Length: 335
Ligand code: NAD
Image (tube, rainbow, N blue to C red; front, side, top):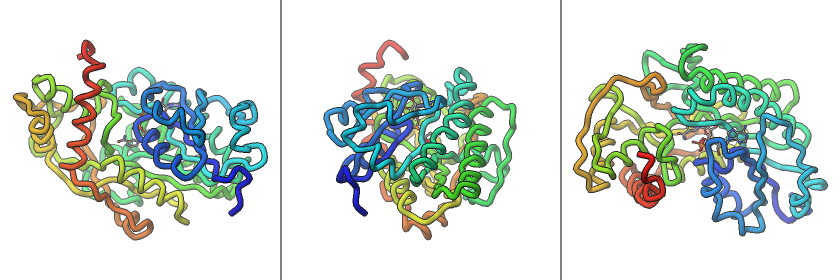
């Protein structure tokens, strides 16, 4: 394929977030990347390393509002007017268990108006679009183990996490409707628990919570029972899965995550060890915004993308905890 600018133009919404920034790091090696983010839960720090790269452009914008790429003079370098956009990764969504309470309207608007705006861009440019959905669309299933894509889920439409769960369900429906009515080449990744460097330390996600308390030698609280299980996918594996999905012919939703289960209590102990901490474990009832953890069946991803997580929990946690040790210094005072 010939590109007037010399490279593919790829748009990443939510590119200054945890997953988005790692995805931009990878995509910018071979492509032009246009990262769009309003920093509602992401941070400029996550993309600091990319600003000096001529293959990277950043646009601060709320995707709930229509995005006119022609308004951005800096995109002339990528010849967007002539070449358009070839691929869109749609990651934008406030994603923080504690923020569901604070940002419910923003979460619903981003998933509805925002996803629609991104799909309109895909239509205009005849671009492929990969939308990041979530295991949360399955809700609170009775059997949490090895959930397959043909499970329709069990979701409370007015529960404490409903803005996220229902927002993401609506977004999937919208994406599939553009596929059937407008013949857009769409992909949907149902992402399960993903972890790694650059996760925010203070937004209520489990692994940063464990690490921060362990590093401060405070009690590490596990919400749920001693036998509760979970599974965790390292960020490098997730990015690889997303890129493979974009390059595939698959148009139906596909689970991406780890199917390797671990007791959450053991995960917490591992993190305490990696932090050389004297913290003790305590078990408490689930908070309203936490939920039991689903484990994905990733048979489709294995077969269709030849993908499965490669990074060991030990290896991934070691890198993650190292990053958190450094970042905690800037957060001191918030805990
Ligand atoms: P994140 O909060 O770090 O990243 C989301 C990014 O989207 C942030 O940078 C935020 O500022 C941006 N954003 C939100 N609303 C926006 C808007 N209206 N306009 C522009 N930018 C906006 O979260 P993450 O963990 O990197 O998640 C990325 C995507 O993956 C999300 O769609 C999330 O739902 C999905 N996901 C993540 C996980 C996980 O384990 N991290 C699991 C399931 C699904």
